[in-house]
Amino acid sequence: MTHRIYFDNSATTPVRKEVVDEIMPFLTELGGNPSSRHYEGRVVRTAVEAARAKVAAAINADPSEIYFNSCASEGNNTVLRGYMMGLGRNAKKNHIITTAVEHPSIFNTAAALEKEGFEITYLPVDGKGNLNLDDLRNAIKENTGLISTMFVNNEIGNIYPVEEIGKIAHEHNILFHVDAVQAVGKIHVDVKKIGCDFLTVSAHKFYGLKGVGALFVKRGRVLKNLLTGGHQEKGKRPGTENVVGIIGMGKAIELAVAELDDEAKRVAALRDRLEKRVLEEIPFTRVVGDPSHRVPTLSNISFRFVEGEGILLKLDTEGIAVSTGSACSSSDLKASHVITALNGDPEEAHSSIRFSLGKYSTVEDVDYTVETLKNTISLLRSFSPIYDEFVNANKH
Amino acid sequence: MNYTEKVMDHFLHPRNVGKIDNPNAVAEVGNAQCGDIIKLFLRINPEGIIEDISFETFGCGAAIATSSMTTEMVKGKHIDEALLVTRDVVAEELGGLPASKMHCSNLASEALHKAIHEYKAKYNLH
Ligand code: FES
Image 1 (cartoon, each protein chain N blue to C red):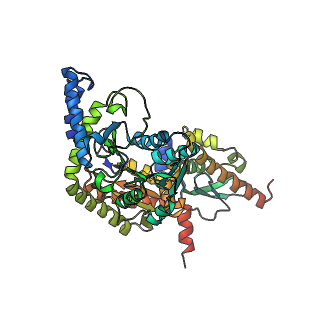
Image 2 (cartoon, rainbow over the protein chains, first blue to last red):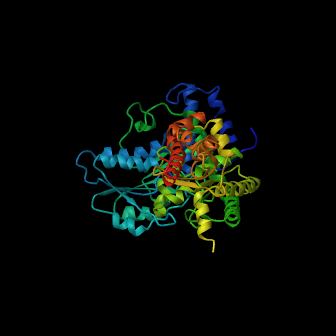
Image 3 (cartoon, rainbow over the protein chains, first blue to last red):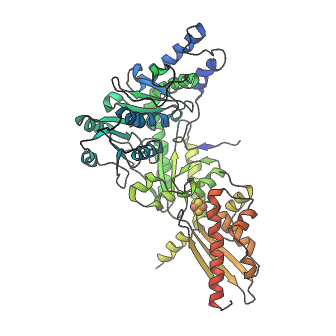
């Protein structure tokens, strides 16, 4: 295959070489079950526990507070459903506060809880995708038991004020869950500073393997299991461990955090170059989200008068991978709920493209993408009825 | 969800795009499902032959490809013959469309039918 430019690192990242090297022995000669008492088992157990220590260190937790699982969706489900099931019948604290811009694994799980009789408040965001903490304060009620917010939004990259939210939560004795999937490896994540009770992490967002994640559960906090079975993960997450996934995750998070400061600077410069050139060189474009509160890797831009799937497909054939919030590219033909939440206008989502850069992005990638975009957008606009109409209406 | 080669060909090299000169039948339809728009421009001669046709589309790859294919299929045809072109015919001609994209195919043929019916009404051709 010819050189591809991968600007979809928020969807997933490729596995980095050091991770492959780290897990290789466990794919070949070291095949024991970490629960076994013999040598083969003990070697693997040691490696799994070392990985746990690395994940814990990366987010300033204690290794005993880290529970490995299969992915962030599982982590998020575990918190919401585990919280609900732990309350039992006639629960008093059956009100959960979350936001209108969560990942589907929170959004749809909250909706499922609503059907079970829970009360959910979805905090709105402003035109830039930011929360107003007064909305949060006003939403808190006698029966509020849990607040769940993301640290970083997956579509627009906004960073949410989790430390402040944590403070508010604890002033009111409310548990606080943070979905940090899009934060780890991009900004510093510190569970003590945040003051959260639960925090979700997923390995494939920072060059680890797909199919493995971790849930931080603060010591003393309990969630009901989703699964019943063996004693793995202290009985909280039964099932034989995803050994290679876990070991790879340990390595990946260790490197991601060690490289974070330099890498964030490097990627931010690339992202800013991309964004600046697009805004300057392609008319009727604008940034979706808040450029002053954003992770360094992401830029979401709307290209007025053209539809996102068309842009995506065209770029794909030119060797560039991006994603879109357009209704046309979602299976249910609904525009991105995140971008729609910004201004209530599905039109913006329709034309939005997310560029998520990463470790392997280069300045050449950025410049080639801008040049390709210029052609793509003007071509698609050349037969866009709404562009035509706009041009005619503005002909004086 | 993958597009056939034919869909990709029409998407990447759309035929009959833009506006033709002196159209005498124009129709625009919008899609309530995902908010897309297609506009067709036709020039129909007194014998009822579609002499020229073009489109403008704001929509996904399938919407653009079906618009392109529709114009290609009816160009040079009599309007009554053109009315036989439906979303299924267009989709079939493209080698099939993903199920979730059939409504886009609908859009193009709907615009075609609307343009022809309006033309007929205008000239009392019923
Ligand atoms: S035009 Fe929206 S899905 Fe095809």
